[in-house]
Image (cartoon, rainbow over all chains, first blue to last red):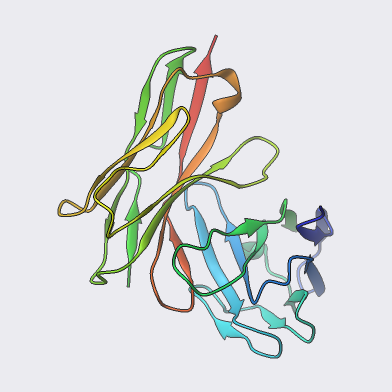
Length: 114
Length: 114
């Protein structure tokens, strides 16, 4: 089972460049999330989606955009990358809104912005 | 807004011994779930154990158990008979009823020594 797949796994950008991170899940999950993980700061929510065609801001949305055109895909875009966006990015999904639903995570994308 | 605090950035334990990781949280919600996730060096986050706030009985999963003190808003993870494969970063997470969003602590890096 593929679960949650993130591409790419590694990327190096120059300041000002743009890129899109792709998250795909094959579990028919309604909810999808993008987190960033920085040393000593845990996981912080960037954006999330509660269903196809919907997106919402999380805790640290500035500098990022997202789209959920298809239920199985959740894209995270950086229009003009900055060194402060150097981080490990995780996509996660869950089936329902219920509090007992665990998150399924991708394996992360290591992004460096020079 | 919810907050989750893990006060132990790093811990170590000898193989076969027991270790307890601490987590405290703050919330005004009455119905919620608490989770412990494990992130090994591979970066793949997996669920270790979860606890519903309404259940008084502490959750147990094989060698992993929790000590849930609702009044004190404390949710510690006990790992018994520690194994080398338990070496990982452990995240405590809170999940309420707001669009299924999870709030994570900053993590505790656990090293199991042979």
